[in-house]
Image (cartoon, rainbow, N blue to C red; front, side, top):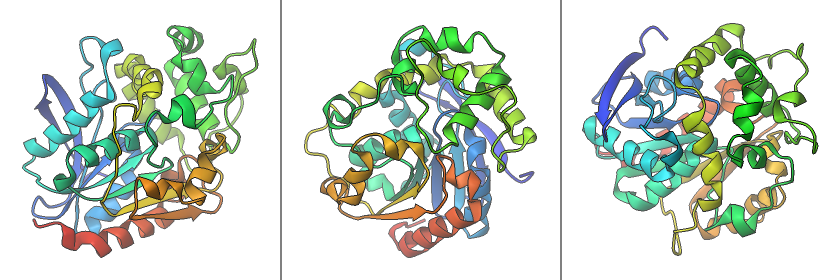
Amino acid sequence: MDQIAHKFLQVNGLKLHVAELGSESSPAVIFLHGFPEIWYTWRHQMIAVANAGFRAIAPDFRGYGLSDSPAEPEKASFDDLINDTASILDSLAISKVFVIAKDFGAMVAYPFALLHPHKVAGIIALGLPFMPPGAFTHHFVLPEGLYVRRWQEPGRAEADFGRFDIKTVVRNIYILFSQSEMPIANENEEIMDLVKPLTPLPSWLTEEDLSVYVDLYEKSGFRTALQVPYRLLQMVGSTLQDPKIEAQTLLIIGEEDYAFKIPGLDEYVKSGEVKKYVPNQETIYVPGGSHFVHEQFPNHVNECILTFLDNNKHRVVV
């Protein structure tokens, strides 16, 4: 961890934080985080890929972690994050990269690959397959009371979170998202109420780890995070026409990831329908794996990642 370098890049009018490990002459891997994460969520993977001879790059998205927030967070978009990713690579003089993304980070990775196929050597997605156009509008039905639907309502999450300090909010989200059941609140209940005060952290997340996330969310707050992804989910993929990702792709899914209880999502992957859009996808299920499978079982996930990178490193010319 001490060898991870931290730099700030001036990108699209903002100063974005990037964590980096490995030689600049090595094939590059960019890691895109989800929520409630920042670059630190990739600590185990960064070390593993750097030790295997790759260059690991993990930015904080705009409005997350140490990166600047946009002037108007409520106007932030997925397009901003896609453009930022391309600009980060340009700033680092990287012409082709492996993209590893988790959760909503995959909603940046997939369209990035569609828009910049020449820049992508391969994709590894954790916990989220490529979605068909307008997926959350008519393809998959999000249950009433699910945290996603609650957080889509302007002001509701702000009021819910505002009853607690940042540490409690981040702790509660990690606890909720590490469970196998979807976080669904009753009609007169808020999402934060789903966690009892004395519920312990998942065994793979230490208090020291939590403090890293807390410190950075105390800096950034949740304004951008609630906008991207939650208040833009209805728009994901809706502007794409006949999308097809030709890059070699690996999807890693924890078998206990609550997200795959969204009606239709598991069947979409297992039936092979996803291959209409990502024909070169391989899928690996991790027994007992949660939504945070890369932190929960880092050694196993790292083995899957390194095998994929080794099999496809010929696609990168350094």
